[in-house]
Image (cartoon, rainbow, N blue to C red):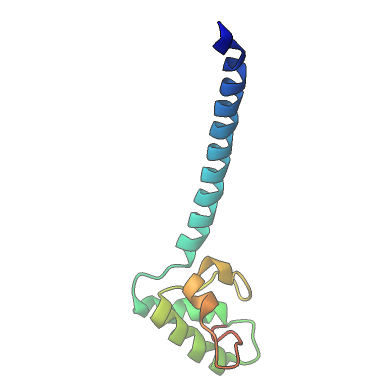
Length: 104
């Protein structure tokens, strides 16, 4: 009989743990979907993706050069014309000697 006082707290703890697990699984799933949309299966897919990535810049040649170079190495191009680099970690983390981003 002495252990019955703990049972409600154990149930609440299990319920909260379950809710937390479900929440994190949805966050991970959403992040995985964003990353999957940035992935490229073959390096031959890089050029069309980079055309989309570089379409709004005034520096098209350097943008295309570095985008294709980064895509060939990383097999990934972030969606959109700017930002979203967190969807492609290799693309995001490749830096110049000065520490600036190498990939557009």
